[in-house]
Length: 531
Ligand code: F6P
Image 1 (cartoon, rainbow, N blue to C red):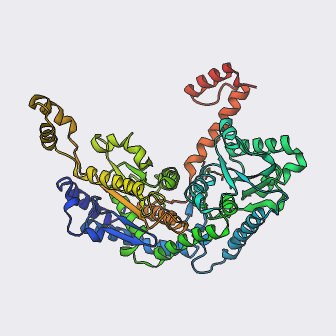
Image 2 (image 1 turned 120 degrees about the horizontal axis):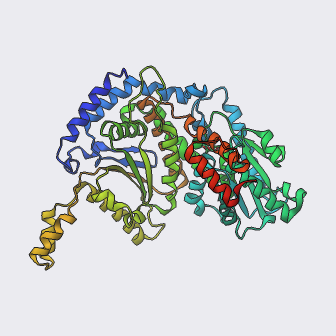
């Protein structure tokens, strides 16, 4: 690694580590650590970073050429070097300067929207009351999140069900109560080769045929894919296949025709609002200098927390029920993008790279794993996500959500000494011997930093801005770490092995897999999984 600036960042980390726990609660420069952008603010004042550390990180960002990498991204230059592609997801949001492929990309989006309009208006030959969205990974997580977040913005005339797992119970659950005569099946798969999706696509087609017959079923099929021939072989008519551009990665693709189910169910107006929020964030990230650019600053903070300070995980806690799928979505975005160890250029890698990202709905986590966050021995950088319209119109419930998020952040940072715990126990009337035995168990070390991403409301625009921010933050962190956030070679290997082992289970070929796999292949064959 030949980065001169990394040593300075590590020196800042050593200095910060030596500060007394909870020092952030007393910082005089709190407002400098509240970073604003369209539709949201990031309050990172409780994180273990300060102006000096941010200064060193900015030097590192300059050395990495982060500003010119953002420029390259927004000029449709090749930023995905290992696959020789630009990354064009941002262009689907409609902002930015024109570039060679933009027209083609927008034509694809227009074709999908025209189909969506027709589907809503009864133009498919039947009334669409439900959509079965079949896909996995990036072809599932974004649409699922957006549907959950924005479903209250639609007229409720169309329901969307999602099916991702190869386990047929998922298909059974997703189709429970659906009427095939009013259901549109949309299979979303960039490759159209993903085995889970292929299996569910076949089930869906068979389900339609069993109720509507072969000819009837064909009116109920549509596909979104970069492999139109395979989609046609499945049964989708050519005019009902919506292309996915190779330069839009699966986990960045919700803005594209991958969102077809949402375009239909949410309607054009809500969809456009979602895109416009994303475009507003694009404009901020494209135009703001790094020192004021929220995506760059969050990425610098991430590299500081997870690499310089070696905090191994990030816990995403959604204090908005409608954002309950955000941790799942971010898991793929961050870990599939930046969970890597191959350097992307001659400057080399700084690592460890991406943290383990996990989380849940905040208030549910409080009654489950927050114990470890407060008193466990493993650190995690906490990220609270809340909104100023918390409580969906019920101010009391909203107050409860927000005060819980704020209280958790405060408790994690301040902790509680056993002395204070003992004093409270004594004040409550406990006898002295018992209080002194119990107090050490109530000690909370504190010093645990957190960020709060606060949306102005859970609107389509704010959701668009939030997801675009996370995408740009992920890209920027990848640049700082020195990796390519747009490929995913690691997941490919497991897919190949799975197919070899599936053949071994089916046919009984004995030399496939390692010793443990060979034993398991034999075991499941004895349970009837062979041919
Ligand atoms: O297995 C990982 C992955 O390749 C993701 O990158 C992608 O989002 C997902 O599978 C689904 O792929 P496809 O859209 O080609 O079915």
